[in-house]
Amino acid sequence: MLTREDFLMIKTLHDHGVYQKDIAAELGVHPKTVSRALKRGGAPQRKRKGRSSKLEPFKEQIDGLLSQGVWNAVVIWREIQARGYEGGISILRDYIRPKRPLRSRRATVRFETKPGHQLQSDWGEITVSLGGGPTKVYFIVNQLGYSRRFHFWCSERHDAEHTYEGLIRSLEYFGGVPAEVLVDNQKCAVVKAASRGKRATFHPRFLDLAGHYGFTPRACRPYRARTKGKDERMVGYIKQHFFVRYRAFESWEQLNRQAEQWLREEADQRVQGTVKEVVAQRFQREAPYLRPLPPQRYDTAYLLFRKVAWDAYIDVQGNRYSVPAPLVGETVTVRLGLDDTVRVFHQERLVAQHRLRPAGAGWATVSEHHAALWAQALQVEQRPLAVYEEAATWS
Image (cartoon, rainbow, N blue to C red; front, side, top):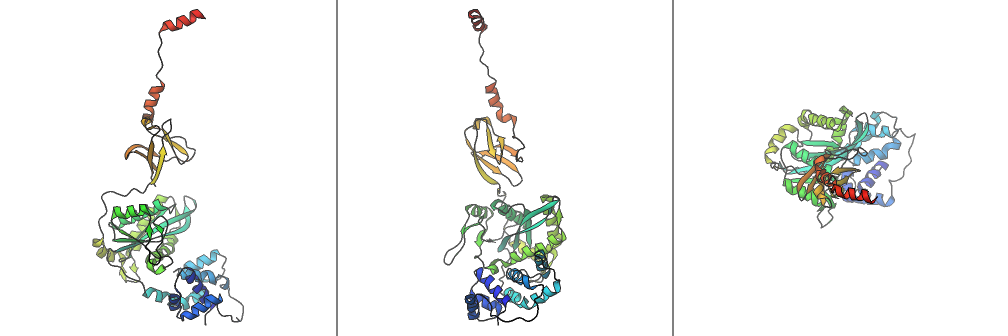
């Protein structure tokens, strides 16, 4: 007989697009049982004796986390504590324990990839103390499918440019490029998700990045967590280990330095639970199958276009930056780097470079840019003295 918790699990998986027969297989029930539960809109009613436990109001949230692949009791305990749970962790573990066979069955269908074949990419987020105050941190996790070696990079945004930058940093950390990169259906990579009979449509710039590094882009099917489960588990692993051990950081630079040190000293040296092997040792067998990095790094800077004003300045994010005077009236290309560099190009030639200024910090000027304008402004028409003598006579 289905319990209320079983129905919540059914509903969550069904809302994420999982087929009813797959839900039934995971719960160990007949597909018609799942179908009837969805039509009924709940589990079979039965009377409960005794008072409810402190855990009762939080079971729906717990089942939601379990359906998303979060099985760490400590992590779940902290999540529900933030929602007001006042009970202990033992009762939570007792509630989760009977459901763990479901996790084991899901693990048996995991597919393995050949060395150097695939990298999986995903984003996570967490709030930590950064620079003395609470800050939301986005981190991209990129994991090699065969060796389970992974790399992550933290930033203040998770847009297209930061996605590409994080992926490139991971490839540089691994020292090579896999044959394919599997991504979720975020808009920075996938314009239109795959559907039955139709392939995914990738973002033109992501295709450009793939061509530059020589990998084949792949997108997982929507709501099919098994396709990219390895990487999604790494998001939880980082939260449960790195961000539990390190909770405060001075700057973004210090955060990412600490992350790479932890990766080398801790994550790379762990014995991976599925393959039962030290990750660093398994990566040594995978590394020769990775393709070499290209000689030139892909430019992940934001791409902007500006028309040069009459005074030889362009506007970028609330401030003005000088460019050579001969470009007045021309349209220039601006590359705004993730390191706050402002590079200005005209017909693919670098003509100016600045550091991005905070709003209200004033204009950025390079004196050489306006030399021609000043020379023109200082030109004064010279007249003979006789003109002034004649004017004085008439007065």
